[in-house]
Length: 68
Image: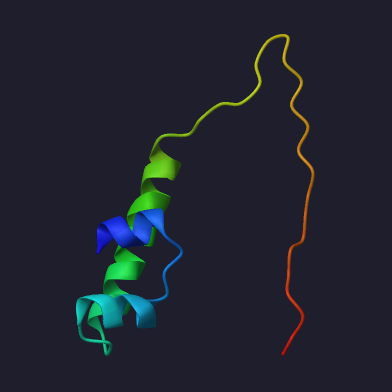
């Protein structure tokens, strides 16, 4: 399940069909836990970009889809 979550943009419904897991709490709990673990790791291991002699430009972007 972790492999699918980390390498593919797989929905919980699709993953449930592939693996035959419970849809009520199992998949949402696993997806939330894996997302939280990634968030904690990034928070605890910040990466510094730029540095002496390097200019870093950060642009804001808003990406959205039209409402259906």
